[in-house]
Amino acid sequence: MPGSSAPGPPRLGGHLGLSSPDAPLLVHLGCSPAPLDQINALAAHGFAGVQDLFMKMRPPQEQAAMAARMKQHGLVLSSIGGDPFHWNTPLWSRTDDAAVQMQADSIRESAAIARCFGGAGAVCVAGLDPDRAMASQLTAMAENLKRAAVQAAEAGLVLLIEPIAPARIPGMLLDRIEPAMEIVHAVAMPSVRLLFDIGHVAMMGHAVADALRQCASAIGLIQAADIPDRVDIGLGTLDWQAILAAIRAIGYAGILELEYEPADQTAAGEAAMLTRLGATLDMSWRVSAPAPSASSSSG
Image (cartoon, rainbow, N blue to C red; front, side, top):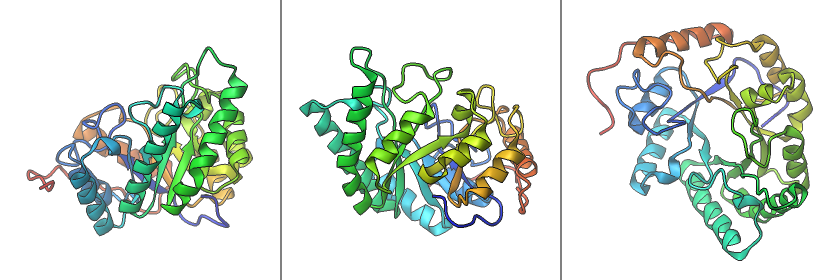
């Protein structure tokens, strides 16, 4: 979250799969798509955080092994998919008994993961219900999240509200920054924060640097992708020097998650992506790209 200062380069987070758990960020450089191999690879290449949208689909034994490996490397679990089976449904804007129970179950599972990993963020999004007024859905989502906020805080869990550009994924309730900010302010608890996705914000037509400054007080996590088409940082049209300057200016010291799949999905492509990333972000550290090891360390 934003603080008084954010010295040095951003602390980067890598994902364990966006469209599939078989397609993590460093699928080739990490020996295999297996989570432990990917955690090792992210640590070896200087990453500080891990994003796993599929964490809730993994068995408890695998979650525990991942937590132990991340602790060994000093990595944090920056975010998980809060509702991997219901993310594009109106779950969080519903008020019926069945939905309220599903919300409680979701928070309980997310809280258990946060406790296992020493803290985590859970992404909360909701599909638009075309048969209900948007204002009532937004109010209900805020009330539902406020009810969950205390339990989340006790577990070291942050509920991350993500506005999603309709040009990228149509049919979502939060398709602009403003209503997402209103929900964060309505809940008014530090365990409910804004997930600021640079790619989505740019696709909504905002000047990203200006939007970062306007949303600074509510941001809990920043995700990064260039546009168009959510490509590697430096391959699109965004002004990353201006964006990084804004991130420094607001004092954000959290993880900057890379939420894209490399344009060239080969070992050489992943290595080039890391080298280009270091140059684009003007990192003070060198991103090395050793050849994949012949042996797997997932066992």
